Length: 265
Image 1 (cartoon, rainbow, N blue to C red):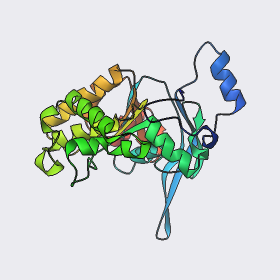
Image 2: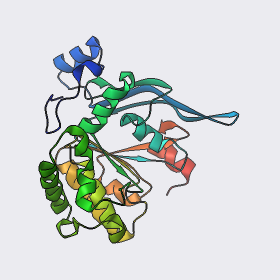
Image 3: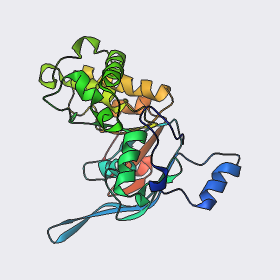
């Protein structure tokens, strides 16, 4: 992983490196180590007197530069897996390595740096700040990286142009359609040039045409060389994916098993 960017280096002293065996395997083998690996990943929640096992021992390896869809019925653990990989939540048990760094061993400061430098998040509900304009929403994450207002504005304008919203940069979220709000959210996810883009049901609140435009944008990010993981119920997304992951009851299953149990034709 590179140590510099527009936003500065991740504090190396707060990032837990992969173990020596993992580093040597990545360095000496003919095949590079996966960009993301998770092993024995578990996440449990206490709901009253009941313990809910959102993930029940997930093992996964994801190569750099792939476009992966994560599919499964509600409650299967899709979003939980995404949030753990993105450092938004901590596992109950298991190990997560992304880009050679052990995410589950990071302290809160290192996790914040990891999310800021390494990951771009896109959510179903957009998560835009209502009082800010489109460009201010896009620029907002750069405030925490010490980027000047002039530079924040410059980069935000360029990203809004890229997603086709140059003429809407001064509009607030309430003045934008759902599809436009999601494009603002995508632009915001790119401000720190992340290697990994995580999208949680990005077309879930959109009409058919708007959803298609968002899928096209995600495919463009993949073509740029980013690793893209998308939690989705939208079957159209499969056409863009290089790989598909299927979850049932907190476990990764084969596509055949998924179709059998979920009743998908």
